[in-house]
Amino acid sequence: MTTIGIIGAGHIGSQLARLAVQHGHDVVIANSRGPETLTDLVDELRALGGAATGTTGGSAAGSTGGSARAATRDEAAAAGEIVVVTTPLAAIETIPVEPLVGKVVIDTNNYYPGRDGDIPALDDETTTTAELLQDHLPGARVVKAFNHIGAADLTGHATPAGTPGRRALVVAGDDAEAKRVVTELIDAFGFDVVDAGPLAEGWRIQRDTPGYGPRFTAEELRAKLAEATRG
Ligand SMILES: NC(=O)c1ccc[n+]([C@@H]2O[C@H](COP(=O)([O-])OP(=O)(O)OC[C@H]3O[C@@H](n4cnc5c(N)ncnc54)[C@H](OP(=O)(O)O)[C@@H]3O)[C@@H](O)[C@H]2O)c1
Image 1 (tube, rainbow, N blue to C red):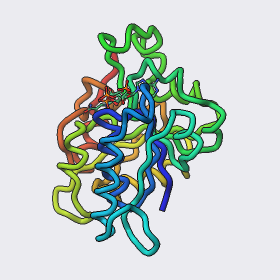
Image 2 (image 1 turned 135 degrees about the vertical axis):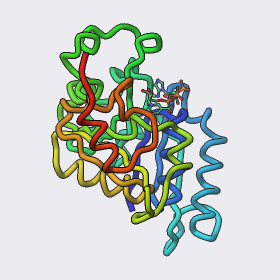
Image 3 (image 1 turned 45 degrees about the vertical axis):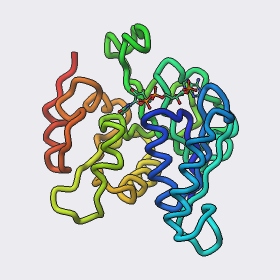
């Protein structure tokens, strides 16, 4: 089992935390306001982990449910073997750099200028959101994932491998091993995986592209990535 650091405890961060503890991972989760504001979520996550074990209290020896604790951003980054960055895009400059060197970092972020402010390099499409995070985290192995599925659907659309019509999610990244790790995680969480290629190809699943939002199988999603146009 893996310790997953989650920076951002909103719609997506809390949903990924739920999936993680239900699948036996230990979660260390942070927001901007401090761990003391995450008590309710952590109580819920511990109950989910306990329910997954058939006991209470999370990852007891021999159990399958994971544990959860709230932490600061720095603690979540340091503790996670895999770390998810799932804040508004403008916050990525606050993500700690040193603790993430060498780690698999999942980037869920999207660019909404009304929320994030205007970012010229995204407006003129000379880069992508996940490349911005990679630039901020030079030693990390960033994988773009979970950016094109609504938060509720992360639990609502999850099905076991082999289920007919199983929903697929995209990964993009420059590090093949990191993509393999994230692919395994996504499959365990309940989704097939489509590899869009390197981070620079992540634009194919950004906001307003054909694949962004709806439920698609892997075959359908590959077609949507191919249909995407830039600009
Ligand atoms: N919502 C969706 O369905 C969805 C789907 C796919 C992708 N996304 C993308 O995923 C990202 C997160 O979306 P969301 O909907 O989960 O956002 P959200 O509900 O607004 O939650 C954002 C979280 O980030 C935390 N945060 C903000 N600044 C931070 C900082 N500097 N350090 C640590 N934590 C910080 C917030 O903490 P506080 O509350 O304490 O400020 C909050 O827990 C966005 O880029 C979004 O576009 C969203």
